[in-house]
Image (cartoon, rainbow, N blue to C red; front, side):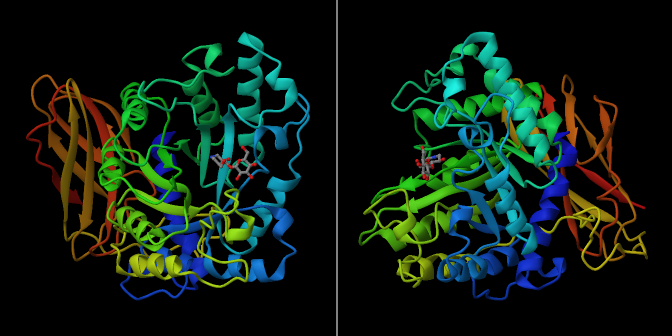
Length: 458
Ligand code: 9MR
């Protein structure tokens, strides 16, 4: 589940970006300067997207900007519960299908937004409670995620379930009243329905280390420890005229839990600080290898949900604002995501075709490990770098401290769980070109301190 999902989609970002930018996957981390947001982000192995709605697709000025600048789309309203299931068990896919078709026709990724949320529920669901609501909600997750299976890069499985203010706890809602486990039940249902989508928790007022973001952090840590299939956390980032000084540190602490982080609904109040805040957000994402993309919540100020705030990157005449220039400069200055193995991304249409000649192999590999530890457990992320001959396959041996054991592995197969554990490539990340990097990870109980990885290539 999670392991398969992670690698496939890392590659999906690179290739969708490559299609948009008209370059090969191998260029995804090159240092040239892109001239559009999407192309520039793709050069760094990331996406840059926007919220939109198919009713805008007939507006040619708007679409010129959307198609030129972005390589990821989120349906601003058309994939929500009220839009997709207006009557119980009667589904309407029209707006979502239109958005997916447009994205696919241009090689753009799609973020799915949002499977469960206390707002924008259809009237029939608002009238339910208890086990009836729970089963309707899980059925909704299953049906919607199944309908777009294989077409969604990341799903906001649950949106805005935590309370504002200092409690750090859950928001009261009809969904919350079905039992505290409703969020994990939703993630498990989404995982079963679309095992290749990244599954995200998404929220606002989490743009710094505060009680709300810490409550979410604790939930994610608990999910990772118990194997609940969560892959990513979305930070909406609807921002005013200031930004928290620990914005990047907050993203980093989530990434250190072993989930991707994404900026999902970025917009910033117009004012003298607007470009600077956009710059800060972009720089923070580029500094974190697990920050896989940024989405702005609309293209032009006049379509923004924040009427009068003019919080976006384009004015109503399709002109770039100073904030646009700030974002593009940061994307071009930023750090690329380490290249990963390049499995066929879309199983039916691998760009450039499948490789037919495996690399020579035999010249070794190296591995490094980074740890995120807490009392009683840890997550280890391991980077494997192929030597000068490339690899056909690789194995990383690590000796765990006494009392420690491996409880879960992604993007590799583990033999054993205590003592010296050998992690071998899975089918899609064994072949690496010279110098190419891939990552795998595992979760353990006990302490992971002092582990030294030894890499052997075949
Ligand atoms: O931008 C969306 C707006 O058009 C809708 O009327 C509104 C309904 O609640 O939802 C807006 O998008 C929200 C998103 O789905 C979740 N995070 C907050 C966004 C702004 O309210």
